[in-house]
Image 1 (cartoon, rainbow, N blue to C red):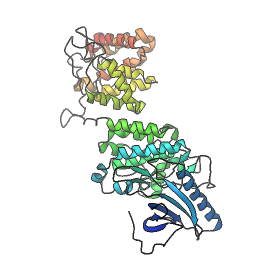
Image 2: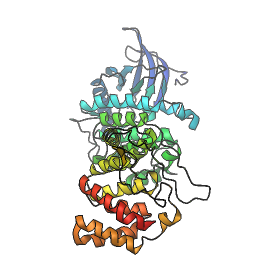
Image 3: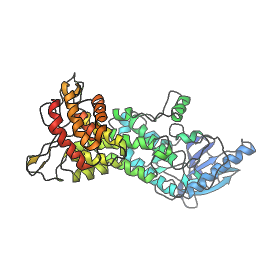
Image 4: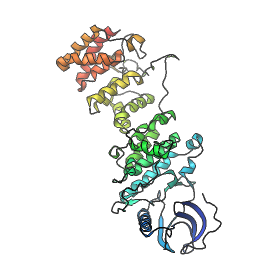
Length: 481
């Protein structure tokens, strides 16, 4: 947005200033005319005459870095640099003039204004530009909404590489904090090494703000914001869920991870995960028994008519797969979508689907937790496919182990006779330790279904798990009614 400019200089070098585009710090950006090529350009000039010799040298070094870094980046999503010179002792850089609004301007105005911003498309372009710059060894270090210009045609341009750092150039600024606190990565608070993952953190912070209306670690004061950024607590996802943007939670958790080794390794990975999340259907609202219910109703899968479904072939409800994907994403991140899609093509029942996905998790603890999360409310594993017209064994068979658990099956203690039968069944595979595992499962289970799933989670081989399920369905499930 152009600003009033009552006293423009008549010329800066060969360029004729037309209007002031912005001022900040010690720099001024003009819209100017290049008479040699007859085109509009953006001309950034920084005044250094009031600086001491040492500080002036530092600013000149930073400005040269801007010219060199941005000049190496020829990409549609990066503002092009045309020229660099000194005018009356002050450095000046000539850039492509981009007509449009900054993303900061687009995000102002509340939830309605933010909802109208095609944030996924914009950030996808930004990540594409960053991927290009990072391959050249250029890190921007100050990605923020004010440095992203969006044209009327929807094209995004990254501006102001003024504090970028080339991989092979280090400025003597030990202890300097370069960046904008609302979007900077934790490592930018100190004087340690900073790499391209700081830019990816900043893009995650912009996405978070676009969805919730505030940066991820915003506090009441600057000091509080910096304290939250430096502390161990991750960014809260409550606001993201409340905004109905839960599909982006796994992406944000990875992008905003404080240890940089846990973030996306490259901009391309971030862009792919963002696109996959945006293409996912929104999670369904939870359903409840009634206004006073304390337990969510576990969603059920459609039961196929007997004899009409072959093993490994079935129609899946997209909402069902989405719920399973969200549960798995807590362990695998964006890869959960690919894993669920593949397992669904090869599974003939919900039970087979859940077990196939659980086997993809590295630790027994994660496998157990994943299966428990499905059994405890978001999805109750139940076998609803048929093979040769005969229904497979199922824990959900019987009146008290349905998809809508009663108070007695959901919260009552596990009967001693059921524990004894479960111990005998599990001992065939685990030996004497089965006694301890059964007692532990009985103490921790939140429902009869959860008790059975905890026992099955201890086995890794699919054939052993299937055999144990048959034993539990025949010998233990009737004692839980």
